[in-house]
Amino acid sequence: MFKDKIVPKIKIVKDGPYLVLGNIPMTKQTIIANEEGRSVKWEQGEAYPKQEEYALCRCGHSKDSPYCDGTEHKIDFEGTETANKEKYIKRAGATVGPELIITDLPELCAYARFCHREDGSVWELAEDSGNPKSRASAIQGAWDCPAGRLLAWDRTGQPIEEKLEPSIGIIEDPSYNGGVSGPIWLKGGVVIESSDGSEYEVRNQVTLCRCGESENKPFCDNTHGSIRFKAKP
Ligand code: FES
Image 1 (cartoon, helix red, strand yellow):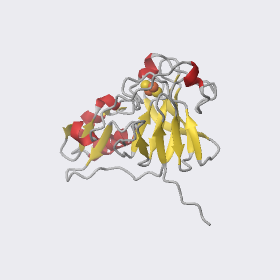
Image 2 (tube, rainbow, N blue to C red; image 1 turned 30 degrees about the vertical axis):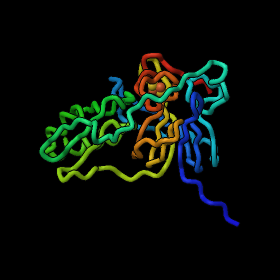
Image 3 (tube, rainbow, N blue to C red; image 1 turned 30 degrees about the horizontal axis):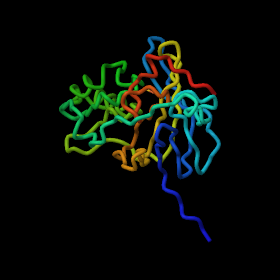
Image 4 (cartoon, rainbow, N blue to C red; image 1 turned 180 degrees about the vertical axis):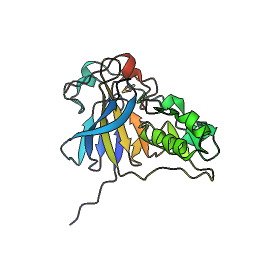
């Protein structure tokens, strides 16, 4: 008999880890910055061993990062989810340019810094989107944002983004604040089930906190940068 295929999903355990179900591939993803410290590209690193199910650290104290090692019990981790479950588009602001719209929900910012580009910020570029180069640059900047904070839309209201396959990226940010470990980059419309059994809006890209200190759990709010979080492998 064939086993039913498990749908890719993240289940958040109350005051515990992220349970990853459905054989989701996972790789290391590093932010590469230029000499001025501006993020310029993503570099894909090692692939972690494939597993049908695994548990990722959510408290930030595992000694087997990115996996959970049960430390959350020893430190009495308090992982209460505080994020708003209302749809992104209902809460995001918009910059409307002649050929492009950029929507923006700052509370999701993971501070990957791809929105500040060599030729201007994503918002400035959207305002100048009558210029094809500016338009293309704004779209790339929104696309490189792992957190789903920024989305590019055409003027008919269609989102401009590729459909991603389910995957997980473990972000490292060696150029920021002396080098920090970043969040978990969840791509490809993976369902996130809250510890209360409800579900978050399914998105193409989001970042989940892995330092344990976000005030917008389960999402990253860039606290990892201010506390100089370094995951312990
Ligand atoms: S990993 Fe970004 S706030 Fe925790």
